[in-house]
Length: 103
Image (cartoon, rainbow, N blue to C red):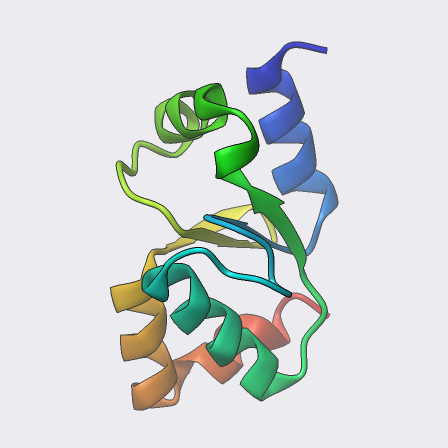
């Protein structure tokens, strides 16, 4: 399976997936860590994919999502956004509504 197809498949088959630098156990940047902390706050299970494992993941992911930065959070196949958007949704109380649709 080509990388672009793998990314599409991963996004479609995981209710919550986070493309990030590092892993949820060991984030490698502050922005990725912020999103992990928000998700952990809600106690949701999510798949994490480390974009540092293969530089082409970032390229193909950005082509797929039309979003240039990492991290990228997807819920039910829909791009929610990066750290700034996730934090804003969390602070406004809207993140809970978004995560509820993943169950």
